[in-house]
Image 1 (cartoon, one colour):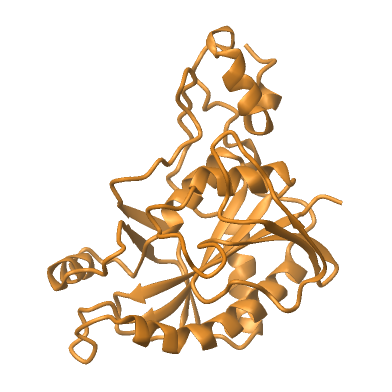
Image 2 (tube, one colour; image 1 turned 30 degrees about the vertical axis):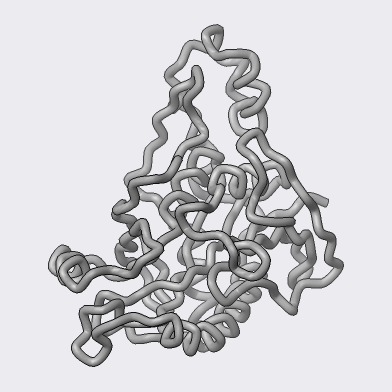
Length: 288
Protein backbone atom coordinates (compact mmCIF):
# COMPACT_ATOMS: atom_id res chain seq x y z
CA UNK A 1 0.00 0.00 0.00
CA UNK A 2 1.44 3.43 -0.91
CA UNK A 3 2.10 5.93 1.86
CA UNK A 4 -0.73 8.44 2.13
CA UNK A 5 0.95 11.02 4.34
CA UNK A 6 4.57 12.12 4.49
CA UNK A 7 6.15 13.26 7.76
CA UNK A 8 9.34 15.33 7.84
CA UNK A 9 11.01 15.25 11.23
CA UNK A 10 13.13 18.30 12.00
CA UNK A 11 15.58 19.10 14.78
CA UNK A 12 14.86 16.81 17.73
CA UNK A 13 12.33 14.65 15.87
CA UNK A 14 14.42 11.96 14.24
CA UNK A 15 11.96 9.10 14.70
CA UNK A 16 8.48 8.32 16.02
CA UNK A 17 7.97 5.50 18.49
CA UNK A 18 4.31 5.19 17.46
CA UNK A 19 5.23 3.94 13.98
CA UNK A 20 4.53 0.21 13.52
CA UNK A 21 5.04 -2.28 10.68
CA UNK A 22 8.19 -0.42 9.72
CA UNK A 23 10.12 -0.83 6.51
CA UNK A 24 13.12 1.28 5.52
CA UNK A 25 13.24 2.26 1.85
CA UNK A 26 16.22 3.80 0.08
CA UNK A 27 15.23 5.95 -2.90
CA UNK A 28 17.42 7.34 -5.65
CA UNK A 29 16.11 10.34 -7.55
CA UNK A 30 17.16 12.29 -10.67
CA UNK A 31 18.28 14.97 -8.21
CA UNK A 32 20.48 12.78 -6.05
CA UNK A 33 19.89 11.08 -2.73
CA UNK A 34 17.42 12.20 -0.04
CA UNK A 35 18.56 12.90 3.52
CA UNK A 36 18.30 9.22 4.36
CA UNK A 37 16.00 6.23 4.08
CA UNK A 38 12.26 6.73 4.29
CA UNK A 39 10.54 4.76 7.03
CA UNK A 40 7.32 3.33 5.62
CA UNK A 41 5.09 2.50 8.54
CA UNK A 42 1.60 2.51 9.99
CA UNK A 43 0.42 5.30 12.27
CA UNK A 44 -3.06 4.85 13.70
CA UNK A 45 -4.11 2.63 10.79
CA UNK A 46 -2.75 4.98 8.10
CA UNK A 47 0.32 4.25 6.01
CA UNK A 48 2.88 7.04 6.31
CA UNK A 49 6.40 7.77 5.14
CA UNK A 50 8.76 9.35 7.69
CA UNK A 51 11.99 11.15 6.78
CA UNK A 52 14.49 12.69 9.19
CA UNK A 53 15.24 16.00 7.46
CA UNK A 54 18.83 16.37 8.68
CA UNK A 55 19.76 12.70 8.37
CA UNK A 56 20.96 10.24 10.99
CA UNK A 57 22.83 12.05 13.75
CA UNK A 58 21.74 15.48 12.44
CA UNK A 59 24.64 15.78 9.98
CA UNK A 60 23.18 17.86 7.13
CA UNK A 61 23.00 21.66 7.36
CA UNK A 62 19.91 23.52 6.11
CA UNK A 63 21.82 24.88 3.10
CA UNK A 64 23.19 21.43 2.28
CA UNK A 65 19.83 19.65 2.32
CA UNK A 66 18.78 18.08 -0.97
CA UNK A 67 15.26 19.49 -0.87
CA UNK A 68 14.43 18.30 -4.38
CA UNK A 69 15.39 14.71 -3.63
CA UNK A 70 13.49 14.71 -0.34
CA UNK A 71 10.21 15.90 -1.88
CA UNK A 72 10.63 13.86 -5.07
CA UNK A 73 11.07 10.75 -2.92
CA UNK A 74 7.77 11.41 -1.17
CA UNK A 75 6.11 11.85 -4.57
CA UNK A 76 7.37 8.50 -5.84
CA UNK A 77 6.03 6.84 -2.67
CA UNK A 78 2.53 8.10 -3.47
CA UNK A 79 2.38 10.73 -0.74
CA UNK A 80 -0.31 13.40 -1.24
CA UNK A 81 0.11 15.33 2.02
CA UNK A 82 3.21 16.32 3.99
CA UNK A 83 3.35 17.33 7.65
CA UNK A 84 6.65 19.09 8.32
CA UNK A 85 7.81 19.53 11.92
CA UNK A 86 10.47 22.20 12.42
CA UNK A 87 12.21 24.04 15.22
CA UNK A 88 11.81 27.83 14.94
CA UNK A 89 12.63 31.02 16.76
CA UNK A 90 9.81 33.32 17.85
CA UNK A 91 9.66 36.94 16.71
CA UNK A 92 6.70 37.79 18.95
CA UNK A 93 6.37 37.99 22.71
CA UNK A 94 3.07 36.10 22.59
CA UNK A 95 4.71 33.02 21.02
CA UNK A 96 6.95 31.74 23.84
CA UNK A 97 9.15 28.65 23.67
CA UNK A 98 7.20 25.36 23.44
CA UNK A 99 4.26 27.05 21.69
CA UNK A 100 3.21 25.73 18.27
CA UNK A 101 2.65 27.92 15.22
CA UNK A 102 0.97 26.77 12.01
CA UNK A 103 2.14 29.48 9.58
CA UNK A 104 0.27 30.33 6.40
CA UNK A 105 2.94 32.51 4.75
CA UNK A 106 6.68 32.52 4.08
CA UNK A 107 9.25 35.25 3.51
CA UNK A 108 12.41 34.21 1.67
CA UNK A 109 15.81 35.26 3.02
CA UNK A 110 17.74 32.35 1.51
CA UNK A 111 20.28 32.81 -1.25
CA UNK A 112 22.09 29.57 -2.01
CA UNK A 113 19.38 27.00 -2.71
CA UNK A 114 17.59 25.34 -5.62
CA UNK A 115 13.84 25.68 -5.09
CA UNK A 116 12.34 24.15 -8.23
CA UNK A 117 12.18 20.88 -10.11
CA UNK A 118 12.06 22.78 -13.39
CA UNK A 119 14.77 24.00 -15.74
CA UNK A 120 16.96 22.11 -18.23
CA UNK A 121 14.42 22.60 -21.01
CA UNK A 122 11.12 22.89 -19.16
CA UNK A 123 9.59 25.98 -17.54
CA UNK A 124 6.66 26.06 -15.13
CA UNK A 125 5.31 28.83 -12.92
CA UNK A 126 3.08 27.56 -10.10
CA UNK A 127 0.86 29.81 -8.03
CA UNK A 128 2.35 30.38 -4.60
CA UNK A 129 0.30 33.20 -3.10
CA UNK A 130 -0.96 30.78 -0.48
CA UNK A 131 2.03 28.46 0.12
CA UNK A 132 0.43 26.29 2.80
CA UNK A 133 -2.47 23.92 2.19
CA UNK A 134 -5.30 25.48 4.18
CA UNK A 135 -7.15 22.20 4.52
CA UNK A 136 -4.18 20.41 6.08
CA UNK A 137 -3.27 23.43 8.23
CA UNK A 138 -6.71 23.46 9.83
CA UNK A 139 -6.55 19.72 10.51
CA UNK A 140 -3.15 20.16 12.17
CA UNK A 141 -4.39 23.13 14.21
CA UNK A 142 -7.38 21.16 15.51
CA UNK A 143 -5.12 18.19 16.20
CA UNK A 144 -2.74 20.38 18.20
CA UNK A 145 -5.60 21.67 20.32
CA UNK A 146 -6.81 18.12 20.90
CA UNK A 147 -3.27 17.14 21.89
CA UNK A 148 -3.24 19.85 24.56
CA UNK A 149 -0.72 22.14 22.84
CA UNK A 150 -0.83 25.93 22.88
CA UNK A 151 -1.18 26.57 19.16
CA UNK A 152 -1.50 29.59 16.86
CA UNK A 153 -3.04 29.30 13.38
CA UNK A 154 -1.55 31.62 10.78
CA UNK A 155 1.53 33.82 10.64
CA UNK A 156 4.63 34.38 8.53
CA UNK A 157 7.72 32.17 8.67
CA UNK A 158 10.95 33.95 7.71
CA UNK A 159 13.25 31.40 6.08
CA UNK A 160 16.88 32.45 6.56
CA UNK A 161 20.00 30.87 5.11
CA UNK A 162 21.94 30.02 8.26
CA UNK A 163 23.67 28.10 9.69
CA UNK A 164 24.39 31.13 11.89
CA UNK A 165 21.52 32.58 13.87
CA UNK A 166 20.28 36.13 13.19
CA UNK A 167 22.11 39.29 14.06
CA UNK A 168 20.25 41.58 16.44
CA UNK A 169 19.72 44.07 13.59
CA UNK A 170 18.15 41.38 11.42
CA UNK A 171 15.92 40.11 14.21
CA UNK A 172 14.67 43.64 14.96
CA UNK A 173 14.03 44.25 11.25
CA UNK A 174 11.94 41.09 10.88
CA UNK A 175 9.89 42.14 13.90
CA UNK A 176 9.33 45.60 12.41
CA UNK A 177 8.03 43.90 9.26
CA UNK A 178 5.47 41.98 11.31
CA UNK A 179 7.07 38.56 10.83
CA UNK A 180 6.11 35.87 13.35
CA UNK A 181 8.69 33.06 13.41
CA UNK A 182 12.07 32.32 11.87
CA UNK A 183 13.61 29.07 10.66
CA UNK A 184 15.99 27.69 8.05
CA UNK A 185 14.26 24.92 6.11
CA UNK A 186 10.57 25.09 5.30
CA UNK A 187 10.30 27.47 2.36
CA UNK A 188 12.05 25.20 -0.13
CA UNK A 189 10.00 22.23 1.05
CA UNK A 190 6.79 24.20 0.52
CA UNK A 191 7.78 25.40 -2.96
CA UNK A 192 8.76 21.93 -4.13
CA UNK A 193 5.72 20.29 -2.56
CA UNK A 194 3.51 22.71 -4.50
CA UNK A 195 5.30 21.85 -7.76
CA UNK A 196 4.87 18.16 -6.94
CA UNK A 197 1.16 18.79 -6.26
CA UNK A 198 1.53 17.62 -2.66
CA UNK A 199 -0.36 19.36 0.15
CA UNK A 200 2.08 20.84 2.68
CA UNK A 201 1.79 22.28 6.18
CA UNK A 202 4.37 23.30 8.76
CA UNK A 203 4.23 22.40 12.44
CA UNK A 204 6.55 25.10 13.79
CA UNK A 205 7.89 24.27 17.25
CA UNK A 206 9.12 27.36 19.07
CA UNK A 207 12.44 26.79 20.85
CA UNK A 208 13.61 30.36 21.56
CA UNK A 209 12.96 34.08 21.12
CA UNK A 210 15.65 34.51 18.45
CA UNK A 211 17.92 37.30 19.80
CA UNK A 212 15.59 40.32 19.94
CA UNK A 213 14.15 39.59 23.39
CA UNK A 214 15.84 41.55 26.20
CA UNK A 215 15.85 38.46 28.41
CA UNK A 216 17.16 36.21 25.62
CA UNK A 217 19.74 38.36 23.86
CA UNK A 218 21.56 35.44 22.28
CA UNK A 219 20.51 32.08 20.90
CA UNK A 220 22.55 29.03 21.87
CA UNK A 221 22.36 25.39 20.91
CA UNK A 222 22.01 24.55 24.61
CA UNK A 223 18.94 26.76 24.89
CA UNK A 224 17.35 25.18 21.83
CA UNK A 225 18.11 21.59 22.86
CA UNK A 226 16.51 22.24 26.25
CA UNK A 227 13.19 22.87 24.50
CA UNK A 228 13.61 20.35 21.70
CA UNK A 229 12.93 17.33 23.88
CA UNK A 230 9.55 18.60 25.06
CA UNK A 231 8.71 19.93 21.59
CA UNK A 232 9.46 16.54 20.03
CA UNK A 233 7.00 14.85 22.37
CA UNK A 234 4.37 17.46 21.53
CA UNK A 235 5.01 17.12 17.80
CA UNK A 236 4.51 13.36 17.93
CA UNK A 237 1.16 13.75 19.67
CA UNK A 238 0.04 16.37 17.16
CA UNK A 239 1.13 14.34 14.12
CA UNK A 240 -0.56 11.18 15.36
CA UNK A 241 -3.76 13.12 16.04
CA UNK A 242 -3.61 14.92 12.67
CA UNK A 243 -3.07 11.71 10.70
CA UNK A 244 -6.17 10.24 12.35
CA UNK A 245 -8.24 13.31 11.52
CA UNK A 246 -7.16 13.75 7.89
CA UNK A 247 -10.01 13.48 5.36
CA UNK A 248 -9.71 10.52 3.01
CA UNK A 249 -10.02 12.69 -0.10
CA UNK A 250 -8.40 16.05 -0.73
CA UNK A 251 -10.76 18.99 -1.01
CA UNK A 252 -8.10 21.55 -1.94
CA UNK A 253 -6.53 22.59 -5.24
CA UNK A 254 -2.96 21.47 -4.43
CA UNK A 255 -3.37 18.37 -6.60
CA UNK A 256 -3.88 20.53 -9.71
CA UNK A 257 -1.08 23.06 -9.11
CA UNK A 258 0.58 22.26 -12.45
CA UNK A 259 -2.59 22.18 -14.53
CA UNK A 260 -1.91 25.59 -16.12
CA UNK A 261 1.66 26.12 -14.91
CA UNK A 262 3.78 24.39 -17.57
CA UNK A 263 4.46 26.99 -20.25
CA UNK A 264 6.94 25.03 -22.40
CA UNK A 265 5.58 23.40 -25.57
CA UNK A 266 5.31 19.70 -24.95
CA UNK A 267 7.28 18.83 -28.09
CA UNK A 268 10.10 21.12 -26.96
CA UNK A 269 10.68 19.36 -23.64
CA UNK A 270 13.73 17.06 -23.81
CA UNK A 271 12.88 13.36 -23.59
CA UNK A 272 15.25 12.88 -20.67
CA UNK A 273 13.52 15.62 -18.70
CA UNK A 274 10.12 14.10 -19.42
CA UNK A 275 11.39 10.78 -18.14
CA UNK A 276 13.08 12.22 -15.03
CA UNK A 277 10.04 14.29 -14.05
CA UNK A 278 7.44 11.69 -15.02
CA UNK A 279 6.11 11.26 -11.44
CA UNK A 280 5.39 15.00 -11.35
CA UNK A 281 4.50 16.02 -14.91
CA UNK A 282 3.54 12.73 -16.53
CA UNK A 283 -0.21 13.28 -16.38
CA UNK A 284 0.14 16.56 -18.29
CA UNK A 285 2.41 15.41 -21.09
CA UNK A 286 -0.42 14.34 -23.38
CA UNK A 287 -1.89 17.84 -23.38
CA UNK A 288 -1.15 20.52 -25.97
